[in-house]
Image 1: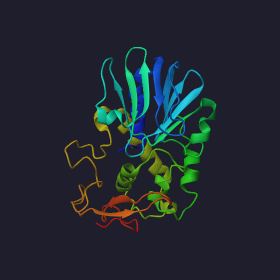
Image 2: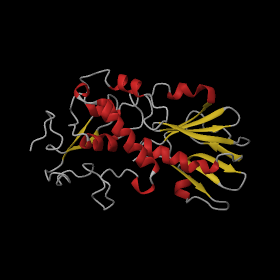
Image 3: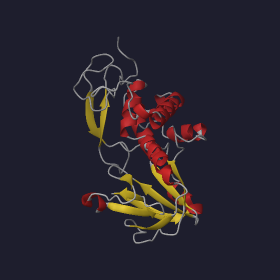
Image 4: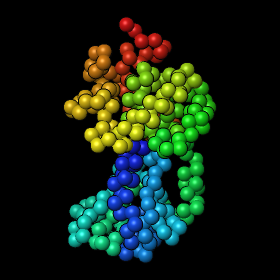
Length: 270
């Protein structure tokens, strides 16, 4: 699932082309569609939450977002994408060494001045994966509306950036929080600390990507996500699920929780 750890891993992979000269290419999506990219040098890649920034030496930045369907790939010299994939390309960058960078089926493609990156990202909350994570500001934003369900507060990228549906569900289980618990009744400091540690582990450890149980066996990688109707891996109670809208304007998302490990009143039965 494309969450903050996904984009962090993607940026690390794309850094293989940092310093490369783009000899040809163009944008094929967004308001900048048709803009030529040749003549630039790739300075580096950065992230904020689920957003990817590709910075060039001419003072411009390519801002992209994968949402649910986008992806990136690099083909070697003389290699081509399958025709079906090539038709979905929204970014193409041919490098001087013959490799080509492709951004496929990207719903957000925007070329902007690097000095104006805040215009695209300034509304976002602190990024959980940044070394300079502002914990106090994140706490202020997440708890600004104490009655808001904890799931909605964490999914709102303007409060804290990087968590998607998988992580919000899994963190709820790990912290023993029912998804409808008001965020004002939650230890948000501890919750954000857990989120940072787990996201960082997922983003940097090869075999740990979005594995929350520590078990790599199929069907046991997650505590509750995808386990509706199956026994809780901790207590054996059947995991429940429902579709819900967490953030105004967002599509319905699937919620999973264990009614024993994540009681509504916050008191786990024994």
